[in-house]
Amino acid sequence: MEFQLSKQQKMIKKMVRELTENEFKPIAKEIDETGRFPHENVEKLRKYGLLGMNIPREYGGAGADELSYVIAIEEISRYCATTGVICSAHNSLVCWPIYYYGTEEQKEKFLKPLARGDKLGAFALTEPNAGSDAANQQTKAVKENDYWIINGSKIFITNGGMADIYIIFAKTDASKGPKGISAFIVERDSPGFKIGKIESKMGIRGSATAELIFEDMKIPEENLLGKLNDGFKIALKTLDGGRIGIAAQALGIAQGAFDETVNYIKQREQFGRPIAKFQSVQFEIAEMKTKLEAARALVYNAALKKMHSNDYTLEAAMAKYYASDIAMEITRKAVQLHGGYGYTKEYCVERMMRDAKITEIYEGTTEVQKIVIAAKVLNR
Ligand SMILES: Cc1cc2nc3c(=O)[nH]c(=O)nc-3n(C[C@H](O)[C@H](O)[C@H](O)COP(=O)(O)OP(=O)(O)OC[C@H]3O[C@@H](n4cnc5c(N)ncnc54)[C@H](O)[C@@H]3O)c2cc1C
Image (cartoon, rainbow, N blue to C red; front, top):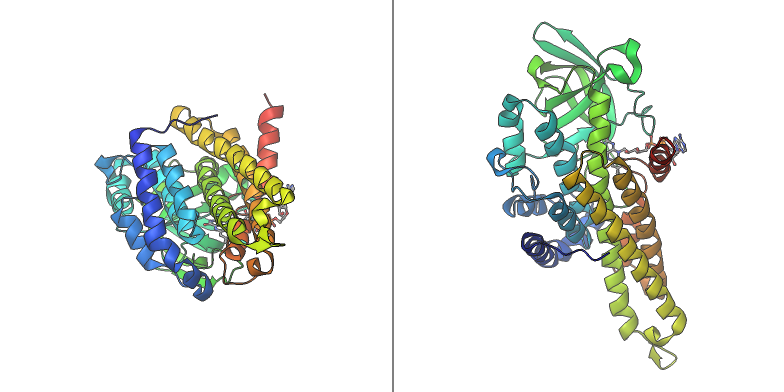
């Protein structure tokens, strides 16, 4: 499948590639080593209109299409998967659901500053006892006069602590299981909102991953997102789009590791010739290239499906499953083809291998994607 990119898509690809090469790539190693949040990269994302990419201009966004967004996340993640996930969580998991489910007042108050990039967003669904079984929410929201009083906690929240606006999920009717969960828009300075543990991670080390604690947190009534008790449906629909973003991140990581490897094997000599001359090395490159293009086809196809249809659950799950799988495989092979040097921090492929692993876990593990794919196929 050959994708003919539009003039705008090509322009965005070129712009983001230059941004990554000039700004993100040079500091990616330091961000990984220190684990610090890259505020300067977020400022660049804002300046280049990449925070709120798919949101129409009337709401402060760039008005770009889903394929342009996927290409941007892919290009960013080629050399900085940390910045890739910061951007993906903000766009797919926060801007999109407020645009899709929010009232005009919510769009005015929350979406505009998010889409302009003046504020950063986070999405908080996961709890200690609600990971893959996300319906098993323990956080509770109780209505008191004009407010919701929320108690509970969330873990592993990307952009946690750094974000200004959070979409959170809580039980509003304990008797109804998944049909008793609601979504809320929460501001960082809400009374009773605390940031707990910050995780120290194997990869994407500059991206903040935090625990959120709600102790009698008070949220105005009008911050309910979508209809009462529709929260689980909203979470699943939002994650369909988020998975396309993570698939694009995985694709970018794989592409970055592949490019580094092709350069390396052409210049590294053993037995009197470049190792690229050995046929077993060439076969590895052939396999890597083929799988990369297969993943790209799935990821771009999921983006196109989202642009043209309201049901892209299957395409998103297949793209996320396959792209994360080959990102892990290609980064592992990239380290192998760099030999002993690949195991050192002198080369970036070891970082890429560590970054790739999370793409198989977050926004639904590989196993969860397979459950979704099989359910779609078998229920037809
Ligand atoms: C760095 C990072 C960032 C994250 N960012 C966010 C975020 O921004 N917002 C948010 O809400 N969450 C976030 N998460 C949470 C993430 O989505 C969950 O960790 C993930 O969904 C898995 O849940 P779990 O960790 O509880 O694992 P578990 O659900 O306990 O799974 C453990 C293992 O069991 C398998 N398993 C579970 N159930 C089944 C089943 N039915 N069939 C087969 N296998 C099964 C899983 O696939 C996995 O291999 C993040 C996590 C990390 C590590």
